[in-house]
Length: 112
Image (cartoon, rainbow, N blue to C red; front, side, top):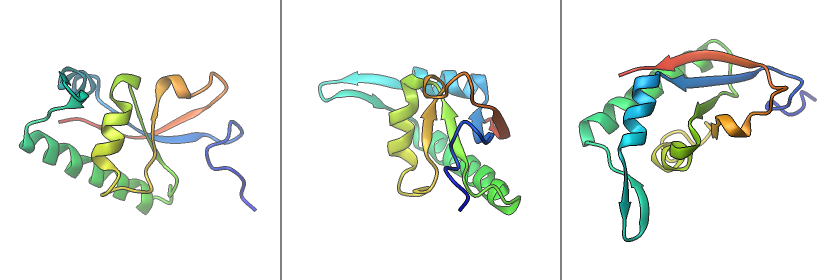
């Protein structure tokens, strides 16, 4: 038995976003009558998904089958919605969900 792949006893394998991209995604949050939504230009959305696919494929090819996308808490649920159909096995977690005792292993950084 391997145990919990996201436990404090093992490094947390993550993909992160370049700071400028994370800021750009945060700026794309728009208040609507139904709540806050992520409004990305279709080209930017597709580019982001393609970059994430390359990062995930790299991680899996290197044997890191349990890898999370680590992002700012403001955009976490929006990115989860964006990627969940295409990447159902990639959890999206925020920095605030990672305790101080976790060791991070940053495998890839997505930049656009």
